[in-house]
Amino acid sequence: GAVVSQHPSWVICKSGTSVKIECRSLDFQATTMFWYRQFPKQSLMLMATSNEGSKATYEQGVEKDKFLINHASLTLSTLTVTSAHPEDSSFYICSASPGSGVKEQYFGPGTRLTVT
Amino acid sequence: AQRVTQPEKLLSVFKGAPVELKCNYSYSGSPELFWYVQYSRQRLQLLLRHISRESIKGFTADLNKGETSFHLKKPFAQEEDSAMYYCALTGGTSYGKLTFGQGTILTVHP
Image (cartoon, rainbow over the protein chains, first blue to last red):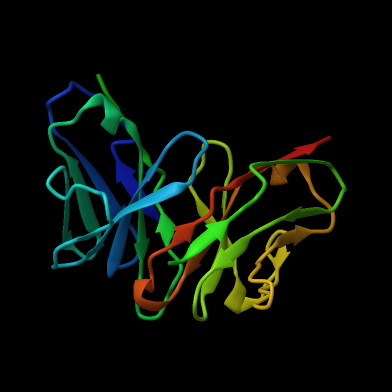
């Protein structure tokens, strides 16, 4: 149980275009979803927290107009990287929490974004 | 501000040797601590959390509030334990948000 999927697993896009990454909880309802960014062999950096039906809360230094997050249902959150640039190339990971006092998060497999 | 420090970026041991991955934290309150593991080409997965006081795959971790540490230990390392290990913390106003340490790459040699 507690499986989280991400789509696509990797994407290449041209500079200036936008790309959407989906995060789905497959067998549970995710009250809260989190989006992280991970650089090679480095730690995960939390970008934002999203709760179903409300606006995402962004961490300091993360541009909310550039990284649009939508959490329209209890099983789906999307991250859209708008007007992508090469420096946005990274590994983006989502996680989901069932809530209701459950503190651990279940992680998706990640999406490799390369902006050319 | 909460912070998690894993002082060792790389740790190498031989199969059958004991292993300890260090984790220290900074938090003004009662945090919840976790260890996550990421095997090669796999997703991050929960290894254990301090409140459950369980042993998973032979690993244990004890929360030492006096030393603000949550070191991960295993008495006899196996080759399949080779992975990236992250210590993480949540609590307080940022309850639910995880703060991760930098990670330790464990390599267990045959």
